[in-house]
Length: 149
Length: 149
DNA sequence: GTAAAATGTTAGCTGAAGTTAACAAAAGGA
DNA sequence: TCCTTTTGTTAACTTCAGCTAACATTTTAC
Image (cartoon, helix red, strand yellow):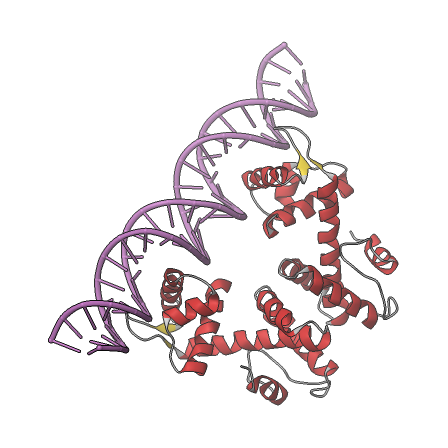
């Protein structure tokens, strides 16, 4: 089991891979507003958990398990973000910051309930949306989150 | 500024005072599932922050500031709990556990938005409910939370 | 009133997550 | 090539929040 702090690093790495094609210590540190030694430590934690492959001075590559967890973390974030922004009508920036924090303290079951609720309220899908954070994304989620920056 | 961990201790103390009339180290430890030395440390943290008065082996008494903060923390908890239980339809026990965690990662503005939303959805009050976590409770909140166990 | 039980405190340790300072390795430019 | 810059690593320290073991104090029961 990996800590919430580690999950944040993992999520950042996944996004960097998507956005820049590679994952660098410096970029992670800059995105996460932390020091490079902190990133280094996090890398070895994640490596120990089998979520990425790494050798000193080498390239960071997420394992399949690491990718899957990343996606799950991002989906949780997206759901909370959607709720804050579209349902509670918080500002975009505040929604992002709060979603980050809230997502870290919420379990899968709660996320699933929230997801279904958000879907229902925003009329993204029918009442019996099959959203489950551990399974494939349902179509409306894919649509919603596909254009994340 | 007091940490989220300290806020939990404070909340527990406030409830113990209400429920048992006094606040004992052992009771706090038992309620919070932690050791007595941890409680002891927390007490001195809260004392340093001016939220309670205490001398070794004496009685724990919240200051006015401590009481006010406790109330605010409890209101935040109640709102999140209500949302999880009544809006998302989580089980009571799970709602409690999750509310505990979520409340700790959410700021005042988000709580206010959530409170207004919960009020609206549950039809507790009109759309223009004046809920503000920093001000006096509005009547529907008082009603809702008065019978907390 | 004193012995036993309950309660509270202290000291010293652990682990997580961060930091800075100094160093090592890799990459780029002339 | 080799020198400089950028990037990554290591060591050693900090803070927070917890823990156990041992001890001190207070309360209770007889």
